[in-house]
Length: 264
Image (cartoon, rainbow, N blue to C red; front, side):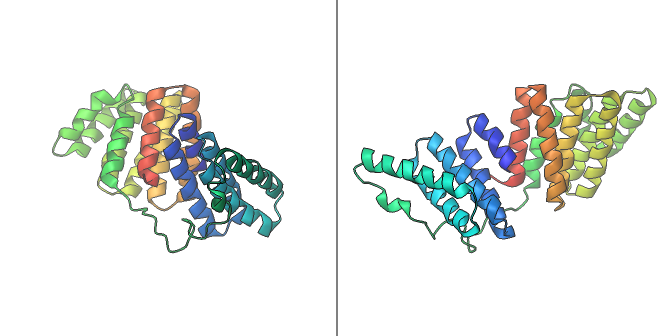
């Protein structure tokens, strides 16, 4: 989530970046990873500073400082300096307004009784998968099969044909579409099998665009299966490839998918 937030921030999507950072803090808090929690709280403060929202920045810096002090983290000195610097700035420029914001806010979203919705919207995720697969040149030839009454049977025939003529690109695209259909039917384990086979096809021919999309799909399926650590690893590797491709359309489509996975 922190990696996704960084991409969102670089793209100027500040609200989305903050949303992912806040969710990562919630998860670190629930797992008891206090040091990571403190670091991300400090990072959120920096983001708010970048938007000139000093009161909110100070709130997060103070939350970070409380943890830093309890753990005796070296970060405490840096966070203390930020609180002093921007606290004085508020006093000088706003005639003391917001002085009361400098204390730790116990009513934060970190409270254990705050509920975050992590429900899975398969329909929405399926639409995002369609958008990504459509960016493959070969997908246009086979995507029409989804309109048939029994699309999987048609796609299986198309796959056998592509395989018989050694069309690895075609194989990869067909397998992605088959995985997409399986995921929409909530057959997530089956979809994962198709996505992994697709990755193998694209690896054989060194197609990095196909590999990036396949890894994105694998990460999605793993995440939905509850394998969040392995899934996040695939998603991260996919985004690394996508950044190297410098393809704005794929990056936007990928980020839209990630938002639908992790929640808006």
